Length: 546
Ligand code: ME8
Image (tube, rainbow, N blue to C red; front, side, top):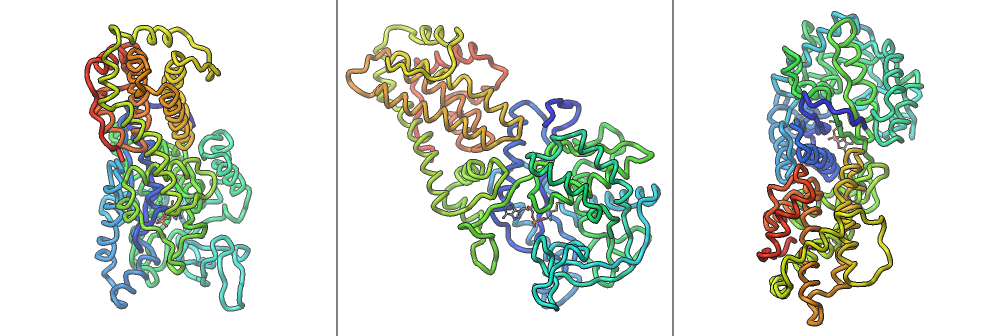
């Protein structure tokens, strides 16, 4: 992930746009939370963030679902999508997702983008008409070749990759000259190893580029007689634009394409595109190919910087499916455990993207207890009025000694010292190293590791509190004082780093600590002067965070 940031444009993050053919599930929430964690992180760093989510409403799958819903009636697709699209919008809102727009492919704005791209590609010679034959899967909304098909029974061909039923289609279509872009794609990817992340998915993309069949020209329209619900091909009322061609362009629509001036670009190119592993091909091959074609002999339309690709969620170790009845409902989960806990769980378990994560009530419970014990209880103990009262017996502003101790370079690592005076220095060392570890991981798109660093500091903090026992009668008031202030300082840094993951918990902590105005611009010494002295003199209000 390139550190070379362009500050002359908003930082642009996108999630996939969801098919509104059923209610949202936890997989959808996961992509939203992933995007949101990075959106909030970039805002913390002072970037203006544009963050797109939305719904993918055209195509045979939705047309079929809408007709089934309205007992075979046609022409009511928009009505059908209005209701379901709203559920995805509601999901984003309930989960504290900070998307700045929610785009629907059925919007006028988007139609204009699709038509503009189509016409440009025609002018540049990348679209031609032809008879197309192939296996079409309505579920996957894509064509497969003979070699991508298998026959469980002689009359039921299915896709090898997804297991979805396919049917033979032979019709007049418009084709996109994908084959002409193979070398340009190869050059793009070989020169930018970080453009698809994590590495395993980058390797998958290189594999795809080596597969001649995948790089064959693709059909990008359907006869109107079969597909009515979609964008009409410009100047050809008999054809409808293929749903994936239409859907992938939403990211351009969201950035204001076709922009009139360079300044009006709403963030293009995308900095982070969050996608699931099942839609890698479309995002890593088709969209970049369209953009490369658009850029040929004309204004360059840059390619997105990073495709952050994630594995899937299973539910109780099984692929989620309606027939198995194990589709976890994200709204129910947030009602039961709270929004921030569900977000925490998703990033704690799924924040490394690489392998499938499993959703189960027991696992959510387990991580709920983890954060409640490590953070909630720690906060209650450190902020307790008893501790404040006991700390007041110390002699004068005691923070100076510890301040001195950690402003000087302290050796790395936790030593085996057990002298209680050193415990606070050990914790402080961990606390002060946290922000840079957090940033390093977040910049590398390793949200799960960033969260693990936060939890590791909390673990040390809890251990230190247990070792010192500031509530015990024999603990000297001065040590109680130091312990309390170092604990509050730890909570201050933890709250900052937790912000992208648990926005409400972090905000409530920052409010009670009086560090709402805290940002990385305040240096360590200044923070100490401002906050430590305040905490020394005044109690902090304790309340259950969970
Ligand atoms: O694919 N775990 O829409 P979609 C994690 N409209 N993520 C999951 C998942 C799971 N169990 N199941 C699905 C589409 N997803 C297209 C996208 S973008 C121009 C068009 C993810 O509603 C899936 O990988 O089927 C995808 O990233 C997203 O949810 C939307 O899936």
